[in-house]
Image: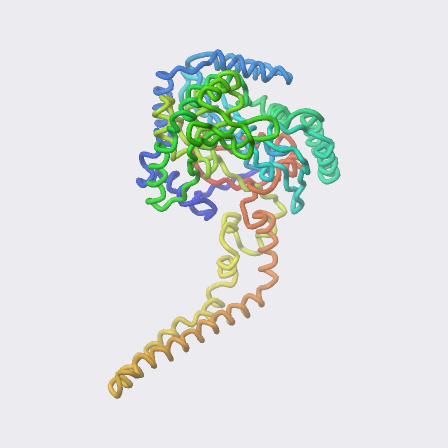
Length: 533
């Protein structure tokens, strides 16, 4: 049995926010929050807008080339860098932090989606070129989000006292011992040694996590044409200095993102990101802290650093790398550097990008088409065989256990626990009693209504007891179902948000990456269940 895929609509998975599924369905309530619709027509519109906007391609290629000096560059990477110099070349970008060892599976799915979409666009718009880019978020300081991977039910976590931007933290002896632990767990699989060697080659002691992640991603995906960009770069930050200055002096972000946030909230959606007065951090070794303004002074939160306007602008001029955009300015920085026509992000990313359309307009930077990243559930043939006797299909596993049990139990057994008819008869009886009692004394009507309420509650309690008895009779089926659900939805969440690529790579090797890419859709948006042989 080979690889096979099942596609299901995102809405049917019940695993994504209303904003995400409404965005995919082009719901009218979200019209106007993005510059271009998520479609080929939207991409073509964005290309025309990009043609009218200057991108410093020479700087981009120069800095990318410098960053790639640390690794061996295959011919494909050199070709992609050369393409970026052409005005008819555009980028399809995805972004993520430098999770330890690549983190959860969706890190990989994002990258493969960018590659797949770039390939797809080249076929459909042959007079242009499209380069997939991984924009690495190295400045994030939330170590707890990035310092671990899950292999099965075990959490493997890096313990370190280092602080500040995670991308600047150094690979140390503690981190290297985690690779030894992974070797013990994954080495028994056919490709386990290969995965462990990938990690050893990438995570050398003394490298920063940004450098190590760069090496790992480059090794895995360079052959597919992916370029990796490290935006924490002095020269690249200098090109963004006019926007940094505008935010420091004018605090222009807040009024431009508040109104869209209010409109999203009014439409019933969760607002993903709230602006600060100044949407920048001050970045230095060991810390990334908010910049705040008090009177005519600019302070760095949690430190003794203070700037006047003169010293602040001098610092920006001499050290633009010390200024780090927050989540609301990050995308603008990305699209200032790259000729983006599409950005691939998760649900939370799509949500906050929908707040920044006016921000892009104010900066005269084209906003890319927003594409929800692909989602996969990886299943194994042995697991599917266990579903057969239960009479369930893989897509039904997205349904809550109680609903699935009702399917398994069947209508005849369900009828035994459904006391709907009895409740209706009881209601008619009490209605008659209430009418007769009311003719004698109107005050008795409320008393009869109270008696009916208690009686109905008693029937509801009996219904629940009947359902528990039925479920006990089907306990073996329920346990099988719970076992499969636990494997596919660890911690009651999507597998891709929990499990690590290494577990699957160790068993299926590079072929897994090829199959994921082959099954990665471009602008078609469906959830994919990929069965592994």
